[in-house]
Amino acid sequence: MCLVLPAIFGPSAAAQTPVDLELVLAVDVSLSMDIDEQRLQRDGYVAAFRDAEIHRAIGSGGYGRIAVTYVEWAGPFSQSVVIPWTIIDGAEAALAFADRLEALPISRARLTSISAALKFAQGLFAASGAKGVRRVVDVSGDGPNNAGEAILPVRDELVANGIVINGLPIMLRAAVTTPFDISDLDRYYGNCVIGGAGAFMVPVRELTEFASAIRRKLLLEISQADVPVRITPVQNSSPAEGYDCLIGERRWQWYFDRIPN
Image (cartoon, rainbow, N blue to C red; front, side):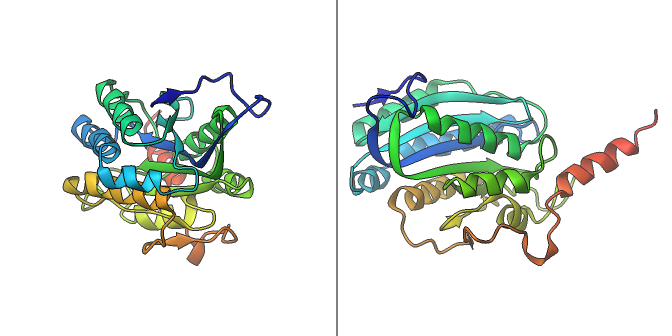
């Protein structure tokens, strides 16, 4: 059964559904990704929720169910809930979630504000109608934060509140082709975006990797298996090796400073 929980639910609700995981899927729809890439990304999530191994992972938890919401984001004021909080308690509910996601249009918007996406995601947990053993924000993106608040303080705020942030850095460009690209987006995510106990990321470097990367990431999040990829412990709140977590903002400033008045 697929149960959509309306936004009126919150911490004061008389009863909250216990779940193994509350998961916000925060998906980048900025204009730096073309529509074909965005379609592949969406199709990757649809395929994952139709996957029998994902269904088994959901059923293997203590409660045998998770709560999921799917969000699209871009700039500081561009966040939208595509599918509200939904309890998935088996194959039937997962398939219904996938069917609904497949049928909905994909939005597109300017700029990249990972910080705003994370703050928006954090606010959604209060209205989940569920009480999860774990709370996770799963954020994808093809570039660094370049608008809104700085990323580090926001990342650290979520981690301090017990929320784990995992990442799907999308690295389809072999080289820097615009002033806003960075070649080491995986290092940026590792140092500046992901955080919390057992946080990890799964980079996507080829179009053909979207589906497998999303499936792998969801399996790890749902099953809480040992993660054989990059981990950032909760106590690691400062970027390693002096990494510049304001690189996206600096590139935007450099670009606009060069535009003649």
